[in-house]
Amino acid sequence: MSVDVMTRPAVLILLGPPGAGKGTQARMLQDKFGLVQLSTGDLLRAAVAAGTPAGKQAKAVMEAGGLVSDDIVIAILNDRIAEQDCRNGVILDGFPRTTVQAKALDELLASTGQRINAAISLQVDDSAMVERISGRSTCAGCGEGYHDTFKPPKDGNSCQKCGSTELTRRADDTAETVAGRLEAYHAQTAPLISYYDAAGVLQSVDAMAEIDQVAGEMATVVKSVMN
Ligand code: AP5
View 1 (cartoon, rainbow, N blue to C red):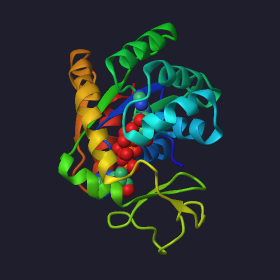
View 2: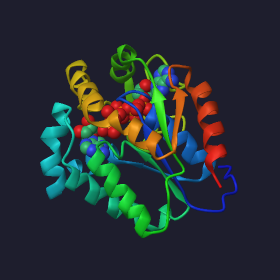
View 3: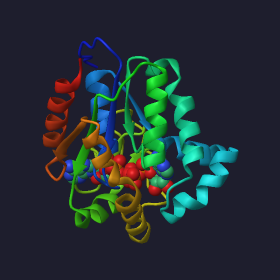
View 4: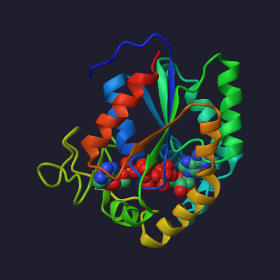
């Protein structure tokens, strides 16, 4: 891992509809800049798998493609961001998703003397998202993401990062659920683009390009906001 020199903990937010590439790009930025990817989707899936009270409440909502309640998500995020490995900075992947969550994050950061370096909007066409999501698989060993067409594992059936042969599909990655998730995004999350524009931290990236090209553009943006 090559870690670029930073003088203060960074807070980056990735905004974009399901399939925009938030997870893909967050993992690449994590490796490049030594930041920690915090995916509320991953944290919620772990809570569902562990059968915690929050996971039990979240399960049906996630399967239906809706948004889990702000209280649950904010509590999960607050606990995770307080952990020691987040001290050098974080990439928020899938959080905030509502104005209530954005305000809770502002309060949390104000209480710790931090600020948002950038909210990066990944701009895509909705029409391409069903294909991206229906071809997605995830390594059960390390969480690396793949795509049947756009990013197949190099040797066909094992993870090129950790070697695991268990590549899984997400329960909510169906065409029907994606439609609901896109609707939730436009109704509840897209307004955050204006929210962060007004706060002076909005950046936009064309996320319809190939993965490596998007990654190059993301890295340029991130370097420009790290100080
Ligand atoms: P979450 O896990 O956050 O899912 P999502 O937002 O729907 O986003 P995805 O993970 O589907 O897409 P992505 O943008 O990360 O794309 P990826 O990089 O994988 O949330 C799941 C659920 O949890 C929500 O529906 C909700 O119920 C709940 N939840 C989570 N956070 C919440 C919150 N804050 N509040 C309330 N509820 C919350 O890429 C997709 C595929 O495309 C991959 O196969 C990838 O290889 C491929 N790909 C990526 N980039 C490109 C490219 N440039 N070209 C071609 N293919 C590409």
